[in-house]
Length: 366
Image (cartoon, rainbow, N blue to C red; front, side, top):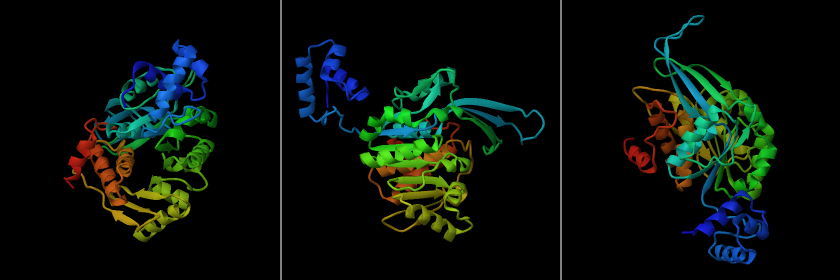
């Protein structure tokens, strides 16, 4: 729907603060209050504004909450040797689970908003520069004196992870107060995606507010140690997507065979999740929902692996893309597997060739 310059300015003001009075908006836009009232009336009749306090209609925006890091990857020339210097090449890229998922989904055609905190430093400037084309980063909280999150990984010559170091202390400031200040974004979103870089109380709060507003919610763990930040139950969670270690940590089930794997998925469904996927690397994925059977999907085998970083986020994004397109569980999981496989073969954390058309072409290969 086309808006003129004045209407666009009004919409942007409301998007930033839906509780502004008409006089406050008129003053900021340097127009009379009656003129503003006429424009707001027109926007309301056209469905752009849906009521007090000037809440904007949903435009299929996805809010991604959590990590936005700078990734530094050291690619070893030979096998790792402890206690000595190892020849390697280094690449620097932007990452973070929430940010990676946002970029993947942005490339797949979704409207993305990033909610996170960062230092007001060179690392954030790099993240902003490379992310802004795929998502809205205007609500990111910049914290003077803090360091932007960073992830440093050492990779073997075949692309497997040897060791990684994560500097994520800044995310302790990803607080309930920060979310409260931006709750309108969650209220108006089609889907909220949160990773466990956030403190437990923030995860619980986002889950409660998403349920209150009727917004779909996706929880994506970051690692097994951060499973302590999981909510006590998954009521209202649209998708819970994790790996085998994370599922074992949360359910207490040791996954040694397919029967255990199915029990873990069912256990996650039983505590409230509507859809669940548990990945197990080369063994594939076990997935199910509250309406159907639990299904196993084989992994797509690759002859070569360039870099494992970002493959899990690519899987999540492919699944959510399918979900948002109205596909069933089987179709959504297949797109997740395809996106993960193609990302494994790429040197990029988020592969630059990804698009809606591209992933559908790739589906024909498998």
